[in-house]
Amino acid sequence: MKNYRRNLPSLDGLVFFEAAARHCGFTASAKELCVTQAAVSKRIKELETRLGTDLFLRQGRKLSLTGSGQRLYERCAMALEYLEDAVAREMGDQADKVQIAANSAVSAFWLAPRLTDFRVSDEEGAVRLLTSDRLGDLLDGQNDLAITYGYGDFPGWHSTLLFPERLVPVARPDYFQTLGLEAPRTFADLAGLPEITLLDYERLAPDWVNWKVWIDRLGAQDLKGLPVRTCSSYASAIGDALSGKGIGLGSLTLIDRDLEGGRLCRFGDEVLQTGRGYYLSTPVHRELSVLSEKLRNALLVHSAGTHPISGGITA
Image 1 (cartoon, helix red, strand yellow):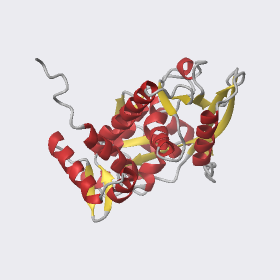
Image 2 (cartoon, one colour):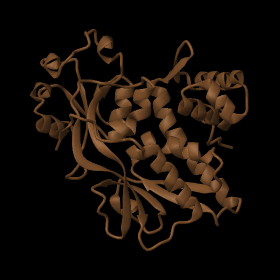
Image 3 (tube, one colour):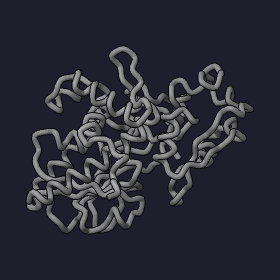
Image 4 (cartoon, helix red, strand yellow):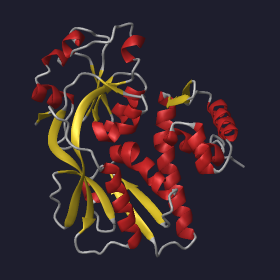
């Protein structure tokens, strides 16, 4: 008989890894999982041995994800959310559930860890995450909540701003060092350096901003002519930046945890405020359930204080 799951490590190992990656530490994850720190450390080591790669960079007590760790975390977090929802459905939690939709970038970098925080809080009920880059899927009437991108003017939906879009160049802190270069101070210092790579993504909608649009609107002409690698998506471009493969164009609030955790750092002072933003949208003609209202309030609390940066350039 074929073993179709022979490549999968133990589910416990993935659960321990997801918690450690989300908290960027073994102590907080051990407290959440009601086990010892040594138990978490042991499970992570077993998982790394099983995969044949390091998932964390260990610098004293400080932990940060490697490129492999970041890629596994993005997929693992969403997979565990899906499994948890499936189990909750079979346990009969249908009366108290909420379905929230978001695009792939928001799901991976901002929403998934906050949904996990919500799940391990005192709140009860099943939360299902639908991930799609099609606006029509996000604004499907079956969704209780949706995180939408634009100006918040979606017919039939009430939208509240979560955070404005503010785009900045980001790279791994040691990116220039790995290329044998001194960290540049300005964009002019990058001119004519073929070693530098800009990580780009396709514009799937007219209002999306990629490197070409960013450079033109800010007049950063020194970046023109640098090698550009087009990634499959925004999430992929940021993932490659985390792996040290180039400079990505990051939306500040989406990558706040990576910036705070030192996995990414900003390059330069230029900020492009596009005038668009990410909105938490709810159907106008439907009353929110108690659980939907709780989740909505929790996400709005997370977004509090994300105001435009003073001095940024507005598109």
